[in-house]
Structures are given as C-alpha cells and as structure tokens.
Length: 234
Ligand SMILES: Cc1ncc(COP(=O)(O)O)c(C=O)c1O
Image 1 (tube, rainbow, N blue to C red):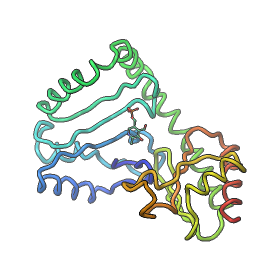
Image 2 (image 1 turned 30 degrees about the vertical axis):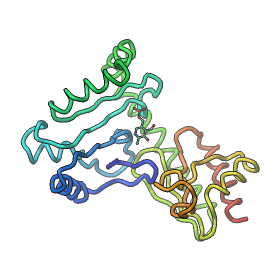
Image 3 (image 1 turned 135 degrees about the vertical axis):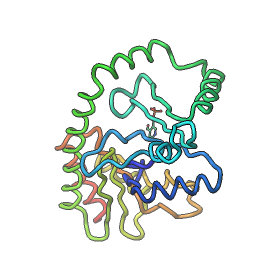
C-alpha cells in the first residue's frame, strides 16, 4: 500500500518505491500494489504508482512485475464490489482464468453499472470525497492535538482514511477498546489486529490503535476524540 496505507496512513517516498522495485527484481518476486486509497490525497504531491515507475524503466507494462489493484470501494461505492487490476498482459490473462474458477466472475450488471458511474461521476465524486475527508482529517488531527495527554503520538496522513495512534507505555489498545465502547460509545480498531501475531503472546503493536475519520461527522469526531482522550488520561 504505497499511498496512505491501512492502518498507518503512511506513504512511500519515490526513493522507497524505487528501492522496492529493485528488491523485487533482485528476489524475482511479484509485487501486489494495493492502491485502494490512492485517489484520496488531501495535500502534498502525488507520487507515481510502482507500476508506472517500473513500466517507465521497462518501456512497457508487459515488462513489469507489479500487479496494480484499484477499487471503487473507497470512492464511489463499496457495495458493488467492483475493482480493477492493471498488470502485464500474460499475468492479466491468468488472473481472468483464476477469477472465473474462483467465483464465476463478478456480476455483469454490477460491472455495467460501475462502468457507467465511473464514466459519468467518478471525477466529481472523488473531488467531493476529498473535500469532505480532508475536513474530517483536519478536525481529527486538531482534536487530537487539543485533547490527547502527553505520551500519545500519532501520524499525519496526507490522504486515506486513517490516523495511527501510539498510546503511552503500558496502555493496551484492546483493553482501551472495551472501556471505550462501554463508557464512551467510541469505537476504533486495536492495532494488534494488524500484526502477524494476534494471539497476544507477543505484545508487539498492543499499544497502538487505528482511528478512522471516514464516517463520523466533524462534531462527532471532536466529541469522540475528547472522550477517548479522557479515558487514556484516566
Ligand atoms: C488496503 C485495502 N485494500 C482493499 C480494500 C477493499 O477493496 P475492495 O472492496 O475492492 O475489495 C480495503 C478496504 O476494505 C483496504 O483497506
């Protein structure tokens, strides 16, 4: 996830992307570029996709080892379950067969509706989504700065839907969630869910949580962060 990763909100620099492409070639492995959030940039300059960078080096998309995965789930509608893959043609031909064999294809009507929507409304809708989510992100970052006690740190995403928070030492995100839902009616995802070992045997990530600013309105964000901050403080 080179742009506004889920869950950290982080974005890879151009140099990091170039390094990844080099490494993949050296190790002879493909790279799945999950670009689910790439259209949702709120500030800063867009960095080219891995696929574009490698295609530029190789002179053609067919020489690349990147599988670029796009989706309309974050911009137009999640319900139709339509996305796209851009990759070297021999790879795409294989993927078409695999898709057929695994689910007999995405519903044709959904694809037709999405095609129509993408042609007629995509750019306008993305602009609306960007404006709305930028405002919510800014509100969340401002509320965090206003309310969170010392010892809490967080990312400042240039896009996407998530802020990744590190709690003070000894505060467990999963424990905090239980209290937060019970007492404050505020929900989030405990960070450990995003680590390979979720059993709790390894405490890596236990002091992290993922906040989302996609659904709640500005006032709710302010209230939610204030309540969460009081719990962390307590
Ligand atoms: C990184 C990432 N990729 C893909 C998806 C889902 O995409 P789709 O709805 O097209 O399966 C999500 C979220 O649901 C996501 O966070």
